[in-house]
Each structure stands twice: as C-alpha cells, then as structure tokens.
Amino acid sequence: MTAAATRQDLDRVTAIIEEKGYRPHPIPGAQRVAIGVTGNTEPINPVLFENLPGVLEVISVSHPYKLVGREAKPEDTIVRVGGVGIGGGSFVVIAGPCAVESPERTLAVARAVKEAGAHILRGGAFKPRTSPYSFQGMGKAGLEILAAARRETGLPVVSEAMDEASLELVVEYCDMIQIGARSMQNFPLLRRCGRTSKPVLLKRGMAATVEELLMAAEYILAEGNYNVVLCERGIRTFSDHCRNTLDLAAVLTVQRLSHLPIIIDPSHATGRRHKVIPMARAGAAVGADGVMIEVHQNPGNALSDGVQAVMPAELAQLMAQLPAILPLTGRRLAEMLAIGA
Ligand code: PEP
Ligand code: MN
Image: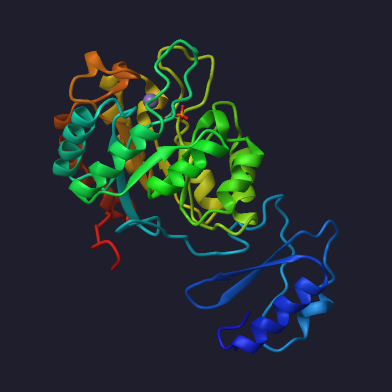
C-alpha cells in the first residue's frame, strides 16, 4: 500500500482478499503497510487490486515462503520478548541451564546470568532426550521454577514445548516458546504456535536446509503469529570433532531472504565448553541478532549437556567482549526496557 493509504483503503483490499476465500496478513512497515495473501493455490490476478485507491504495487512472491520473505516485508522484524527487542540491529543474549534441575540451582544460575548482563533466561522443563532413560526434564514444576526466577530477576524466560500439552503450559508460564531442532518440522505443533500470542524461538533442524527452516517459520506466520526468531544451532555433517557444525553462513543467507531475526546457539552447535564462547564471538562478528548459551554453575553435576555448559564467569567475559565486536556490523548490545514499557 502507499504511505498515504487510508484505513478505508486497507479495509477494501482485505475485504476483497477475504471474499476470494484467502487470508489477508496486514504487515505494518516503517513507511507503509504491506498486505500479504495466503490460502491461494493459483496465482492471483493483479487486476483485482492494481487500480484500487491506496494500492502501490501488486507483487507476486516468487519464493515458496511468502510471509517470512523480504518481498512481503523489506525491513527487519523486531520481536519483543518481555522488555527486550530481538532484531533490527541489536544483539540479544539468552542464557541459562540446558534444563531446569531444581529451584536452588535455577535461581542461582538465573541470578548469575542476570549479573553477567544476559537479557533472557533459558531453561528446559520438557527435554527432548536421545535416550528415554535420560533425565526428561521437570515438566510443569520446572516451568513454575522458571516463573519464580523471572519474578526474582525480572528476566523474561524461554522454554521448549514438545507437544500440544507442553505448549499450553509453556504459553501459560513463559514469555517465549522454544521449538527445538527435533520439532522443526512438527507441522501441527508449528500451527499451534501460530495461534498463540507468544513469540517463538524456532531452532533449525539438524538436517534442515535454510529453505526448510524458513518454510517451518512460514507455518507459524501463516496462522497469524509474526513474532518468530530463528536459531542456527548447528547441523550434522561428516565432521566429528564437534557435536554439530555451526553453519554461520546460514545467518547471512537468512538475513538476505527474510526479515525475521536469527540468533546462533554455539552450545548445541559445538557440544564442547571451550568452543562455546569463541563461536559466540564468531556469531556476533558475522552479524547474528543474538546468541543462546547454556550456563551451569557446576557443569560436572548437570543433569543434561554438562559438557557444553559454560560457567557464569565465561558468560560475563563474553558480555565484556561484545562491545568491541558488535560495532563491526553496526550492532549494539540490546537494552532492557522496563516490562510493560
Ligand atoms: C535446547 O536448546 O535445549 C535443545 C534441546 O536444543 P536443540 O533443539 O537445538 O537440540
Ligand atoms: Mn541442551
């Protein structure tokens, strides 16, 4: 739509889209509103809209994804989580334990990551473990502990949902829903995320292409939830010196194709403590919108992923180094606004 398009102009266009049985997606931008259309199985005749008042241009989207692409929205999306915005030139740090293990441990690590300057607390309560005999997470009790940690520290919290039941709980207790690598193509779960009002952290599947990651995000946007943050967490390659291979160039590909923010997870990507902070720095240097790092105060005792957990002091060191790296890509450390501001 043109910058001067009126409410009436927008309503006229959305009404025509609905009349055709399609779904309109008004996408506000800095200068003007774009209206995405989904639900059509055939190309739409541009003549339907071209000469309507307020219509600037009818763009036929050439990619299989529509709403996540820059054709639909040229400017970066900023996803608000609690008091922090992800995307649009800032760099956000999400930190916390792999899993919520107990109230004491979680509160202690929450205080430590807050003290280090992290913006968002992570912690899994529903854990997708390779072995059914491994610790599976504390479930709802874990989310209650996370919520208590948020109350005490003021940090927004993110936790993984694996199915419908855990999604409902995560929506109730957390500020952001994490969809793990193993669930990236759980399409019914993605659709359900799309019907919630909480932002979603969508992790790349370990054998997914960038296009498949974007199509997974499209499922969420297509249902009306535009607040999606992507996460590169390493992919499986022949290389066996790390748990996975951090595909840093995927950040650049995503940023070219999509307006959605993308962060990196150097913890699951490397699986080795001594590689986590250096790869986090690499992510900052390449221009990622943030990092997610697993932190534990006593990694030797961690119930999951202890080998890749960094100590709070290492996180603090990274926070001190970031201001030297971020200006290289015109970024700055995200600022926390008061919740509700
Ligand atoms: C996690 O972040 O806790 C996790 C399980 O990661 P991934 O889904 O990337 O393996
Ligand atoms: Mn983990």
